[in-house]
Image (tube, rainbow, N blue to C red):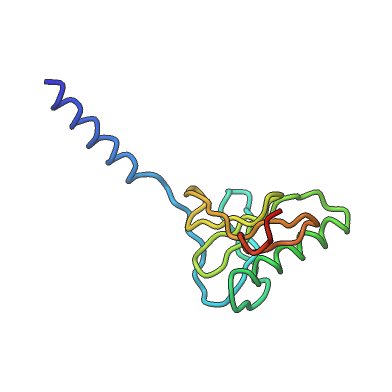
Length: 125
């Protein structure tokens, strides 16, 4: 009896996980977007630049974040999108994910002076 209950609970868990909403970004090739949310909490995409790669997109988003901060803004984190991936510009670095709700993976780290670098590119002390 316990085996059938375990199987039933696993099937129910799998069915529920399939119902989880995943917000996926635009997948326009080579276009870097700044992402904001409207009053209904739906993402709005603003074309920032045409970028050859994710690192260039992240650098442009970081430059925009710094410019807003120097103009008196307070947003320490920024959300962007590039070729079907969300970019999360955060204090620790840049993280990427295929959806807003999905796992985030480290794409770029911050150096000691705040610049962004590819993980492993900086010499270890």
